[in-house]
Amino acid sequence: MDYKIGDIIKTKKPHPCGNYEWEILRIGIDFKFKCINCGHVIMLPREKALKIIKK
Image 1: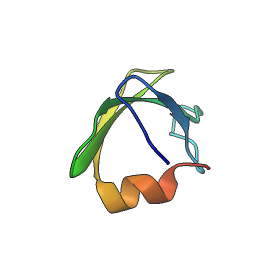
Image 2 (image 1 turned 135 degrees about the horizontal axis):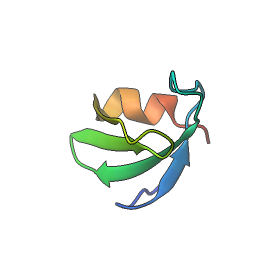
Image 3 (image 1 turned 90 degrees about the vertical axis):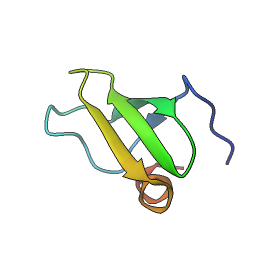
């Protein structure tokens, strides 16, 4: 699947704040996501990021 910066994705497991939705801030070798609910920012390696995204 093709992802773009600014896309909203859903994850398989929720963030501790209870939210499943994340905004993509960066794409490359690493993905950078921002939680829509609390604003927490995380960075994950590409393999792990693609694995947690609900298809």
